[in-house]
Length: 453
View 1: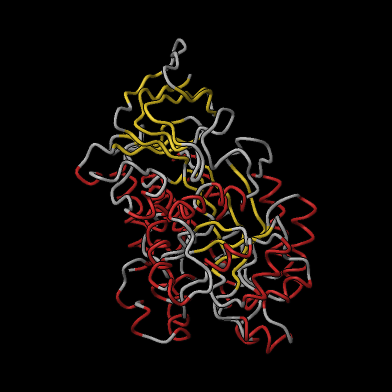
View 2: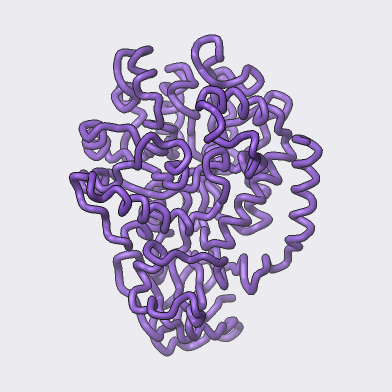
């Protein structure tokens, strides 16, 4: 079975590639079978009238913390009301109370919002493993992803350094390096699908150098390279001088020394890195997941995306967790990411990338970060991951001449009209086909209330 999108107003094949006007797109199974005008509909194909629609490659979110969805919009956790250390001391004990059911429902909540706004692949950095919640948290995330039809990459994170030795992590959330590595290996062996159109993948993702022992990173590199999976961690979000005080070098060099870098590695944030450090990352092919919305709350400065782009650092886009971004809307991050760079353009040595570059970060850039060549653009043989917006609305008058710049410059403020993942329509006409959103909402609210009230 396939789907034929008939008479699309525009098909954005990639962020900087060809835009086809008044054309069709045909899917067959999990893949795109054809793109062009006047495509025939094979027997059994569902035909959708896409008149007025813009079709885009599905968005790829490369950094999130789904579990934090249960601490959104809480005035007592407002960053502006306390110092960072005070905030961490307040919020981590709350994280430590979460149960296995909390991790399932918070993941379902975050993924549902992502899908509604065009995201088809999500990487979650799940570093919170309270002892009472057990070791099957990633398993429950894959369960949530399967229910919604999400293409899911699990970043199995962890923290190993106790608070008594300088971390910010409560003892309840700590693991030993051996525990962490053993469960990473279990998750990889159980869930990781290495082939094309894989719906489940696993990355080795220790939380951050400031909260882990050195051997945690050494062993992460060994395991990831042995298993052929991606490496990920937090870098350059205020810890670089702490690492220098402990180890004599800043974070980028510290990680380079143990091999936690390269084309199979990407870091989240990186707003405090020097130009020399960015050049070193570019030289090794180490990528960055830029999370623009946390910059509003916790960044000491706006991340220097122009420098990263000029130096050739591989760039992708992430939402980050709700501790520093209260939504799970990668579409919104495309717009805010571009606007933030325009705000400080006069202070940068390098020009702001073109608006379409921010869409590229959220599509092909995300695919590259996750080591995927089968997602991120629309072409025959690629995964049928896409979203559609009906532009026959007052919102889009005067904007339709440049579909590639639209998400960054104008922003897409409402849910998509359709989101497809792996050839399956997972969101359309304001509904998740086959699922009861009201029931999912009620169940999630009940678990949240029971745990955190």
